Image 1 (cartoon, rainbow, N blue to C red):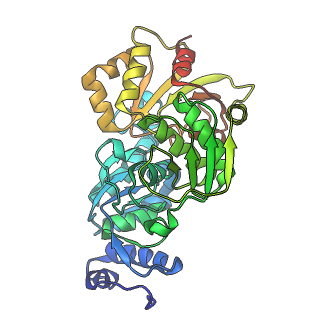
Image 2 (cartoon, helix red, strand yellow):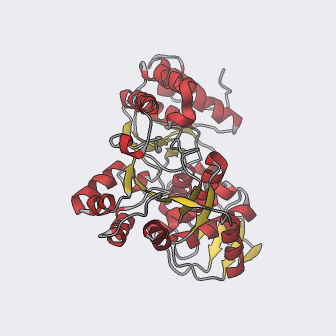
Image 3 (tube, one colour):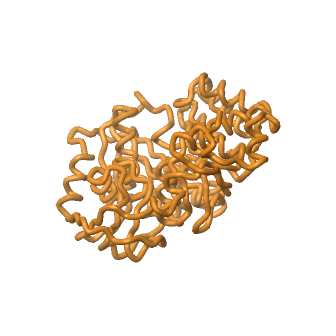
Length: 398
């Protein structure tokens, strides 16, 4: 039963009563339960959804069974995209993915497609058309995308779980609590960055430092002179991974307004160097180089294509540049795909090194991503090294 404190519209009551189908009813049960737990007074419409929990490697048969059940009569009400899957949905064979895994992964994607989800599998939906505007309420699940959308875009979302994001997709609603309320989006600790940041790995290291110190508080970051979209997505991924941060304010760069906290911490060059030492394993025997965590932009792919043009990847090393399928399609039109693949590297769509079934295939990962280091160690038992993109590509061809 729903508490009187949570007010529902007639349409929402109908969904909860099962008048819009079994999946919509189950979805409303999830959303209203969350609303009760977090003390929401009402549900609010969302304009877009991004769903995590897509790789069969993570879902397994139990997760797939749930999706099949929801797909019987569940249909999306708003634009909905997916997080990365465990493989490139088109070119999985040449990336060493087994037929058994590929078959099961396709079953997962088919279930989402049946519900009307746009089956573009990416952790950077804002780069491929799922782009909310400032002040819009959304329901996203991928931690780096949640942090980016709250902070850089100025949309409003909590970090949804896979089931709650799907529930929002099937109802077009979420409960109004957490970061959907302006009073919960105020900075709690100020950081003064006293180091020049020049590349995506630097921003990843900054995220590592601030994330570990901050926990789940909202940081206000001063002293960053400039930041590209690519650097901000790197920072968002890292600060969310190492601290659970779902939102930050960066002075002169991000659009949200906030009071500036009195409590101030300093971040120095030495702090970043300590973070790099933490992510560098001395005995890392690098046989896997991966760039694109979060998924690479067309700008990054173009740079990498030029670095690899006319070169060859060294025997015994595997190179993945991971991105979204629409970005890969654009890379093909621009000639970037051919330059990358002719060098012996792979431009991999839909998947990433964090969710693909890679355990046991490699020993050491070099990447520009602090987030990729976290998952490579924790899920795949790889040794890691974090370097600039240029250093990663040099390692691949030297």
